[in-house]
Length: 133
Image (cartoon, rainbow, N blue to C red; front, side, top):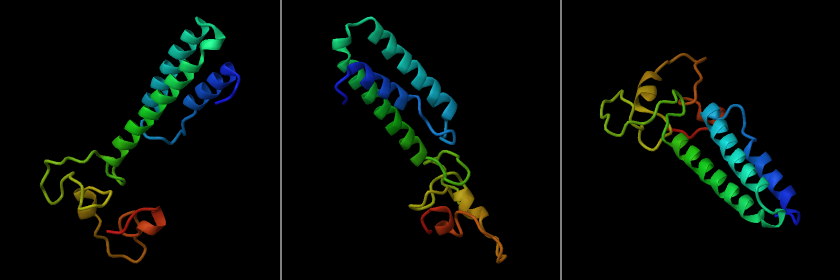
């Protein structure tokens, strides 16, 4: 943390308002982050600058919790079709996770093209940064 509490708070607010545009749920997440930053900034304006340390810590904790929740949501979605995994869907072509892969059963079942030009995240995971099945 910087020695200047105002600079530290501004750095944390800027980090909170920085989210990659291609992030899943970008619109909802950035609105939540703006509301949180606005609340913390409003509280900081009402306080003595010497007491801003708790605002910075609070904002960092909330942003870390939000990022952890976003990561957990992403782990529970099919990497190909973006559908949430349905644990109770036991069909061979359902939306349950296929074994330990990041894909649902439906995407794995639909991926049976045999042409040499066929390339997808399931058949060629190295090309897409995924795990092999």
